Amino acid sequence: MGGLKLRRLASSLLSQGLASPGSAADAHQAVARATAHHPSTAPPSAHHMDALLAFGRGSRLSAAALAAAFVDRLHAAASGQGDAAVALKCLVALRVLLARGAFILRDQLLAALLRHPASGRNPLALAAFPLGRSSFAAASWVRFSARLLELVLLLPDASADAEYLVALPNPHLTAELAAFAAVADAVRQAPPPPSSGPQPNALIWEAVRLAEEDRVAAERNIAARVKEMGERLDTLSLADAVELVCVLRRVEDQGSAPAPEWKWAGLDEGVVCAARRVRERAEGVVLRRTVEERRLVRRDSGGSASARVLVPSRAGRGGGGGDAVRFGSTRWAGTVSAWR
Image (cartoon, rainbow, N blue to C red; front, side, top):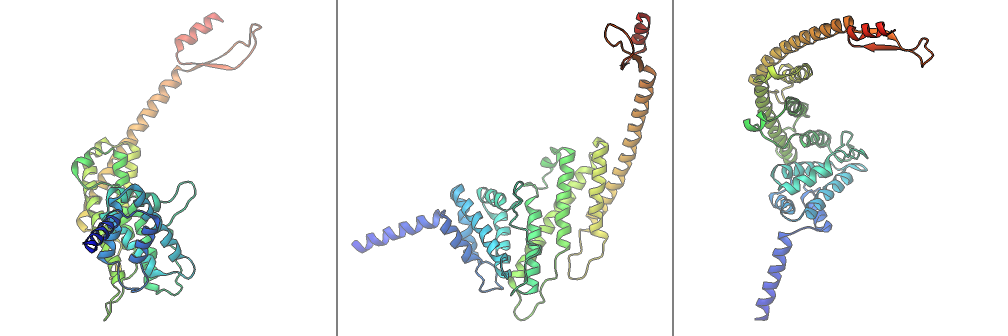
């Protein structure tokens, strides 16, 4: 009887520990297990990823503890000679957590990983990740994945839903189009994947798969925003139209530039053609708005030139010269002349 009670108590304690991980020690331990160096070519296992996702089902403190643990792990992996396997496992795990994690976990990861506006601290600044004892391929994918993750963090937390896009102001819609175009362009700059041998590097191929998912999602969102901008061109101001033309040219460049056979071929030709058509129409809007503004300037300058009259002001009661006074009407100028 006593043994049964002990087993029930142990089971209760274990279930509570699994359901609400939250301490900093728990977070560091979970991250260390998911991103262990050995085996160096295997991505984080599903069991370890489930343990990390569980931190998003607890309190905000538990989610913050996990985010801090990832920052510490990335910093340690990038220091000294560098450990590309650990760093790449961290980046792969972070990408999965941002896609599948609860809102509270994604919120804390964003706060921890984005560049700090005051201090400039940036945990994802791994462009100069040391080769050290790591392979060149793994280190190259660390640098690429960190840069891609930086861009993904800047994407709006929204979809290509038509109702959402219709509610966006023109400048915001253009800014989102530019953000998704930056992600698609970054994927095209990916290093070559490892050759398929008897023992393929599953970790790098998992990073390749995640990058391809980001490219497909970016292409879908670009197409939706290009279509929406095409329906509201007549509402654009001159500044908005100029900015849109610049962004659409970047979208077009991703389809026309040749890419090596081991890279993604760029955006779909249909998306590029749609962007080209909208860009040509937007250039027409730029010309039309420019002509309209020039007419307004000429009209304003002509009217003001005939109406403005400069007369000297009296310097105190003693008379004498003084500063000129500008009047906006010749009627008032005539009154002043008569008074003098």
